[in-house]
Length: 113
View 1 (cartoon, one colour):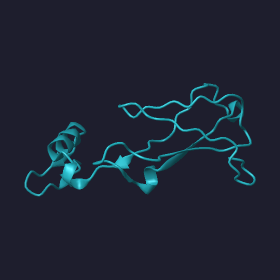
View 2 (cartoon, helix red, strand yellow; view 1 turned 180 degrees about the horizontal axis):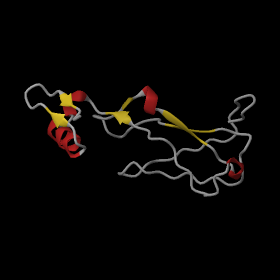
View 3 (cartoon, one colour; view 1 turned 120 degrees about the horizontal axis):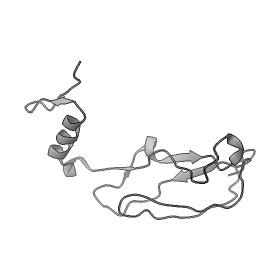
View 4 (cartoon, helix red, strand yellow; view 1 turned 90 degrees about the horizontal axis):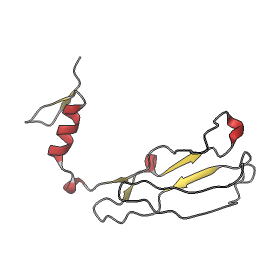
């Protein structure tokens, strides 16, 4: 997208693999352009609600920003799983592995002091 008039200069679709990873090859330096990656659709019927804060991300595509690596990464993108399909036991296990305490009766997460 052109930084001045927000005109779309280049557009390309990409599909993620089963781990959610994707790659979009880009040639050249794009200092005067913005690269915005957006979610379009999810193949999973139980996980296809777009979350506004995880719907899109921007990536700088210039070597003039101090980053010399040719590989760039976006912030996380993702869809929201339907509440009835959440595996609460798995969520509790992850939280406990992170050091949180989950009250088994109320489901309240306690942050240890």
